[in-house]
Amino acid sequence: MKIISDGGIVSCNSKDTIDAIMLTKNIDYIDGIKLDVRISKDNILVLAEDEELNKFSLSNKKVVSCNYDYLKKIKFPSHIFKYYIPTLEEVLQKYNNEKIIILELYDSEKIDILLNKLYDLLLKYSYQYYFMSENNDIINKLKESNLNEIGIILSDNEFKIINSYNIDEEISLNDDIFLVTEYPEKIRKKYFLSTKSEN
Image (cartoon, rainbow, N blue to C red; front, side, top):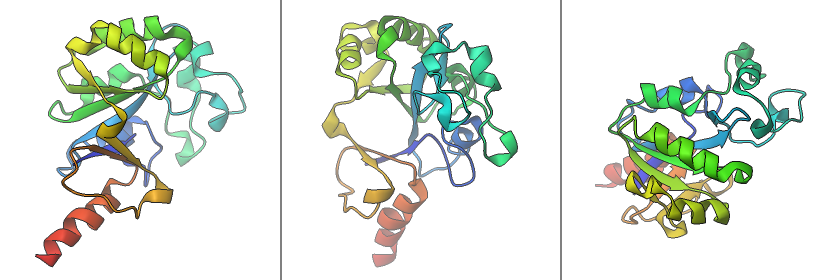
């Protein structure tokens, strides 16, 4: 089992922000990170979990309907407005290339553009790339695209997402899966530290 941080260390940061993501890169028990990838109106690949901006502002606009100059000015309402919506390239420039990067892809409105932009960008940075999406159209397009050359599409049985409501679920350490969670430290304490203390 590989522990994948979902959007970074969020205990004192906001998910999918540069600080939250960068905190994971030197933590040895975290094997990689999952990033939520969307595309802006001007075709910039950005990191945003939510389709609409009303989580961060009074705007009901969608990420895909806004240029990146506009998106970057939207500050997260917590942490004294420290955080903004980053680009995927910002993260790839700074991250540790020994870690796994899982990209969850959204924006079915611009699938072809998103995948072409993604291919061009990922060729510039050497990571272990995996792709996932809840959208079947995106998965089908992924299978037909040249992204197969530089990454692997994850099937449903290859990953498991641990949320706050199923954090106590029992999981076998021998399962050959990516365990995607916003709570990597809790997973470590539950499965790894407890196992060592019993031996």
